[in-house]
Image (cartoon, rainbow, N blue to C red; front, side, top):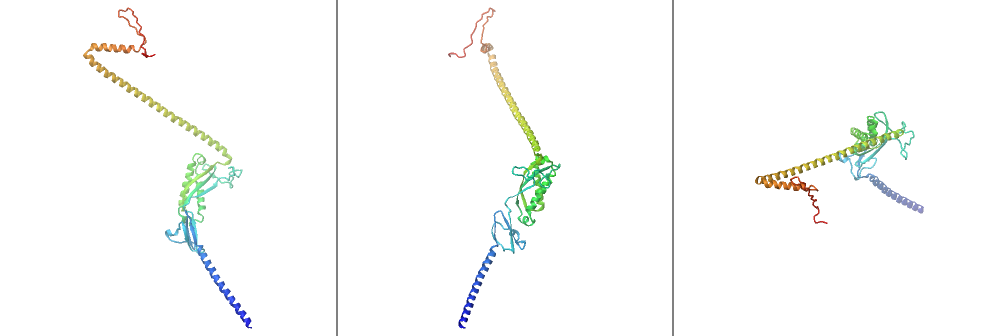
Length: 339
């Protein structure tokens, strides 16, 4: 009996020790779980991001404290709190191929019928023609709270607004403006319409730019459109070449006119200078002539003869009794003393 009692007491002691050890381990596990639970409330907000904390579905904080900037933060874990992050400052891209047909690897329509109703995307112009377009929107989130909580899916709403703007503008312009003559005006009109629509909706988005990455006629008549475009390009090239020739001719004519005028002015100034020199010379000679007319007369006669004789190659002297006395005077050598 005593041995049996001793064994029972030993078993109870072992059970008690095991229970105490189990409770200790359970406390440690609970403490670790408690710490791990609170650690799940740690979150990181990256650069170009903003974050909001929702406590039981409502944004926590007031004023500027409602928005959490980049860095390490902590909040109550789920289900008490929830963290919503918004890429606010990074430029995002939204591509819309709603109005273009699906293409294969070679750029041809995947649907061989091309622009099939309810299968391929297309737009209708103001003069009831079909064409295709592809758009790429670049935007940033200007109001993170409005973008995140006013709309259930703000990006989907933004894409819908782009489609609506494209349809509205497309239906108001002729096909030539859409795909040939007024492509930039078409793009700008869609962008302006989209900006106004986003502002009216209060989407919290700022448009950085809208690109019309493709604008195409229906595939079945693409070759005809290309022929028209080629003819238009040739026309513009010829007009441009003619205008360039006209401008060049104008410049050359203007330069020639200026040259003629300049030469005329130069000749005019030269003649005036020569005449002024003759006037001065005449005045000087006149003074001398008044003082001694006979000497000046002979001097002028000799000077005139000398200048005249220099201009002829053959010279003859005739006597005044009309008896011919022909004396040939050879022209003076231009290189006196030369070889």
